[in-house]
Image (cartoon, rainbow, N blue to C red; front, side):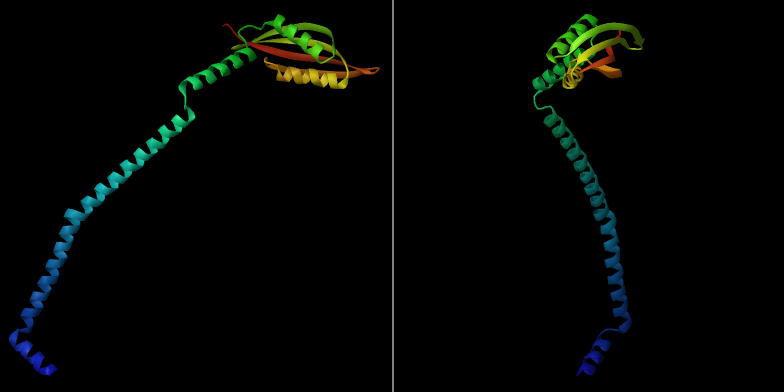
Length: 189
């Protein structure tokens, strides 16, 4: 039966015509596929890639704006905090050396620390670029914990105080401390 069908098909269609028609159909399909690829798919893929990159840029910008807004939720509060920081910086390094105010602060700190301030003597004034510096020699007498309280007070005070020389020796039950410190100010120049 199979043979009869094959024989009928061969007589009905010439074998060469069918192969030519199949090859033409296959070639046309490939040509249509290439045209679709070049005319439709590749331009759409390029456009999709451009839209993805624009979306990524927009997302990055949204994140940046969100981070800025989170960091500066309230502009008034931000400016108030900025002003407080500037005031603290100005108190730490004022416009002038204000030697008298610093000496009064040292005297009060010595009284609060229960340590005796025996001597305060200003040394040399130095000008280094945008800042002025003044060296002071302090002589203190008192107990160990009083000295620690005094040193902590210097460290935690509003002014920046740099201790560049410290000598401690005992006299009986008391410690005598020679302290060389520097204070600074912003130069007017």
